[in-house]
Length: 304
Image (cartoon, rainbow, N blue to C red):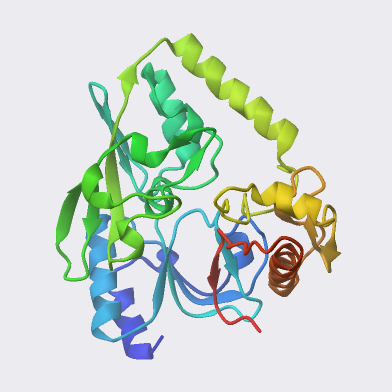
């Protein structure tokens, strides 16, 4: 970031909300990768809008980050600005069966709040380790549920600084995608349409899914969750297992022995280790079965 841009940012945010050369391994669930040149944590939508206006006017590169649960940052880091929408923007409000959730709220937090208010429909998301904003962008889902099933409307910040409200049908939700991936929009909040239910049943379902995750997923190791999208007609994990790659390791990165759809940071893996393993898995599955796996993980920075 140019010095004049940084000085302008310093007029908008508190000093504690501006970090330089911030290690991104602290902000991603892979626990790998280099530094962000500038790391910002705005405390309100108004601050976010002013920061973005400053960066856009000066043609500064930036990336919007939630909990970093679906991101791999290169070892060389990111020369642009990372703007994290997380703990500083995490309010939840209720109006009957509608829950308004800010973009920085963790899905687990939102699901727990829904349960406390005896609202059902969000149990599937209780174990997804991302924020509401990220979940909207990629139409996150698990165990038969997807965000598109519960989204009523989404508030987004446009590149002209104006706020737009989009209905669920306007969001163009698909498998791990949405309109947000195609437009310069930033999710600010969403209204989720739930229904009243029995709290004990809601909590029991959440506990059931938690047990399944513990049994089937390598939660004891850093990862970005499911590494690959589900190819049509197949399951990525089974293809990887059938390719003989269970437990295959490059450096500190490993194909999970518990669930082959996960690449884990087994032991101080570098981002390069993880990327090389992702590429090798794609190569081997394609060579053996003619199926091309597509990473679900987003990449930030330069990779060889």
